[in-house]
Image (cartoon, rainbow, N blue to C red; front, side):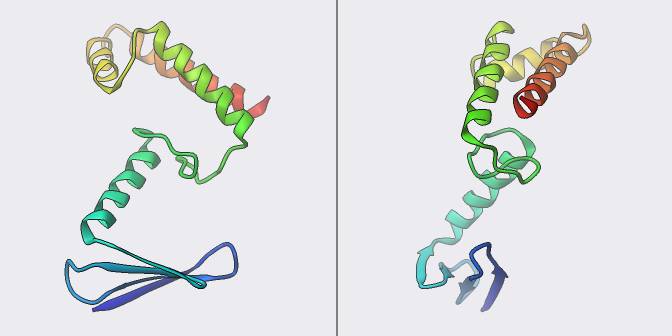
Length: 125
């Protein structure tokens, strides 16, 4: 049905080939090749979108495309978790509840400000 190809960092070419609509996709780069289902590609795209939006975290995907050094990433992760815990946020559901309950009183804005400050501090130190 079609093929997509892009250059990759190691001077290779990544290709995605699909033989038919909603069929398996063959991914190839240099001498490596593997097959994923169309559903798995959708899952990967959703995961990528969630990482870029900040809803999920990844070692390889950031909002701005950078990959952080492990020590900075670990420091940021610790700082973010400390801030989340100080506001009683332990998971996605408690985050959404906190956000909804504190939009008008300014507490959610303070939380976001603290998170931004933590990110900046972790990256510049």
